[in-house]
Length: 305
Image (cartoon, rainbow, N blue to C red; front, side, top):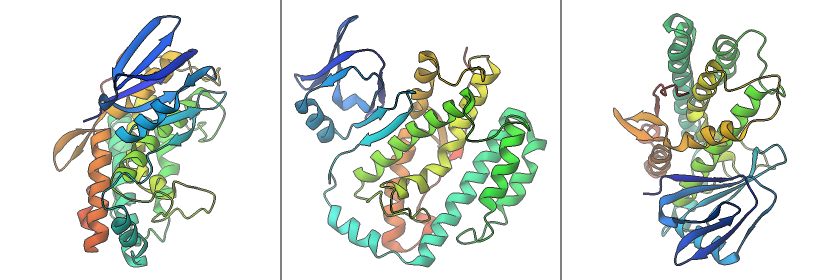
């Protein structure tokens, strides 16, 4: 199974050579088996790559992410119709009922708030997480009371500090955005691999968003990025006096695909959990049962220097 995330932040020439990703830059030549690669993040504006490599990446199911001038991923290139049952899965997806979509969204929000609570307990202590644990039990089908937003307000102030504002132009927000973009790429990759169409979501329905379903499902994984960013702040690796991330910051955030979570009481890498969730979502839609979609449970990451 693919497990490696390759991040390229220097001028580099990329090509396909004997079935492998071949890199050539000022540091020399390197190669990696494509079957080991889950995602490639292209950070430098001075990267050139061949169409043969692009085609091979799509054949192998490798997601390619492009970045903006601030080095934050801003685009994803995914395989086109790689699933053997693409049309069948698409028809089933398009026929899902509104009640089923609401129950699936309820399951996602319950898992998201649970994971926020577990993240908060890991970072700040169990007492700080009590409010969120209570909210989980109140989430109804479709989350009509928008408890997701209520949980978020309590969560961010307790996780960081009262002055923290999500969306501000500081290093903490940049790190969160980078981490979420990495997770988004893995979720989108897994959905396409299982024949789902990321454009059509359960809750997100923007006509301008090609990844509504991806943005629905990735909600449950966000606390994994939050905990990593918290640890980076605690270790003094992030400075909110800066609005850009260092190369080392970005490299650490790119490892999110190999962070752990629990599924069915077993530890799984985030990349594998995304695939299990995509497969389960297909089963849930086919059998009209939200319970068939497994959801991950937060596992505290180990802080590293």
